[in-house]
Amino acid sequence: MTAIAAPRPIGTGRIRLVDYRRRSLLMARFRVLLIGLGFLLVALAALMRIGWLGMIQPAPSETSMADALLPPRGEITDRNGVPLARAFPAYALWFNPNAMDDGGAPLVKSPEEVARALHAIFSDLDVAETAEKLRSGRATYLRRRVLPEDANRVMEIGELALELPRETDRHYPQGSLAAHVLGYVRDGRGSLGMEQVLDDRLLDPRYRGQSAALAIDVRVQGALEDELRAGMRSVNAVGAAGIVLDVDTGEVLALASMPEFDPNHVVASDLTVSDELAQQGIMPPAFNRATNQVFELGSIFKPLTVAAAIDAGSITDLSRRYQADTPLQIGGHRIGDSHVIGETLNAPQSLIHSSNIVTAQIGDELGADKLRQYMVDLGMNERPYIEIPGRGMPIWQAGDWSRITGMTVSFGHGLSVTPLHLASAYAAMVNGGIWRPATLQRIEPGNAPRGRRVFKASTSARMNQLLRMVAVYGTGRSANAPGFRVGGKTGSAEKPGRGGYRRSSVVSTFAAAFPMDRPRYVVIAMLDEPQGTVASSFQRTAAWNAAPMVGRLIPRIGPQLGVLPDESRDIDLTELEYLVASGMEEQ
Image (tube, rainbow, N blue to C red; front, top):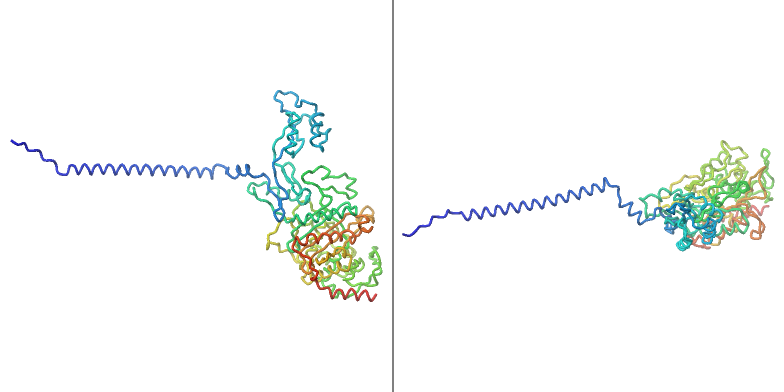
């Protein structure tokens, strides 16, 4: 009998296959879910890390990288990027009396022996003073800024107490150039000049690696200092000052005071002098005569008075004549000239021959109140506008001016200002009549301050002719550099002292602008107490010392500033030449 197999359930294998596939799909989905959760956790961790770095941890990247790679104090450059002040790594010589761990004597040799050994390396180191520091047992600096080769020689002395820590020092690669503009750094902080003004910015980590550009042009600065130094020495002056100013922006392209100092090696004598020397008018080298010392600048004010009179309408006819051969007696005061020029003079002639008598009459007709207001508008009653801290306060008569004050100020007496005051005033007189503050910060093209109007444009145009006349025919002839169309005025004033003016002490100044057919720059050169020498034909007045300095300076700086000599161009002087020639012929 044949066995019959039991029937298999229909679809059993297919059901198992479907279950297997379902389990596989679920497992795959579970794995995908695990991977997704893993990525999500990684993303959350990254986001938490970013949030912690940005919100909780103090940003380490800026500080640590900057500290490691960039100097702690920013660089100062001139307007063209030439470095004027920069930081560099250096050694210092430090006396550490606790260098010996056993508590023994800090020095193996005697303080005197060590001091002499250091003097052999650093010749300017005082032996007695250094020995006293070593003997005192106090930790102290013996010297800053030690060169590597000198550091090696110090180590050869064999004294553990003489340590040589690495520091970041301030270096002025141009030496004493523009020292009064820059100032210096001591113990990490800026002193005097733009080092003090820009101190916070130069130390700010946000500006690491960025230089601060000044308006100064090292080429112009070098030429100005060279001419001032040579001029001062040739006439044995106690000091000198000079400024080159852009008349359209107020930028100071050069500013110098003599004698100078080296900001790389500032010593006590650079900063102070004895009371006796100060009473004699001798200032320390770090004192800035250009911005901080006030002077009665004399005849250099006469063009400003004539400009004010033309502008206010009290001079309407330049051919009008004023008596010039008799001194003026006003309330017990006598106003006279050094010599008789002629019976009468008109305004152009009074500037050419620098007549006090005629200028006083012009100032008197204008009126003391009006002249005073023009001086206020020119900033003569306030400290000069510039960034550096050393700024002298003018000696200015408060309240209303008397008649005699107006007359004396008209020819530059009774009012004491700095050479920078004068530079800004002359810039306003020649640039179309706009006064702008002087600045040592570089101004980008098109960003010059608007300033304030002092003179009409027509007044400025007339004064450009008159200043050119003085340089061609008057006391400024020795400044008339061929092809540069120079205009300007001399000023020589006795310095006040006990009991009145000192006839043996004068301040001589020349204020110039060029080129006068389109003035672009003002140049001021001043000598403090020049003497009559062979170089000045034994004369002490500005026509013989300050004006020649400007005559040598302008050909040096003109081409560098884009002003080339051109003897085929000039401002039209035909009308004024006729007035000057015809007036003198009548006498």
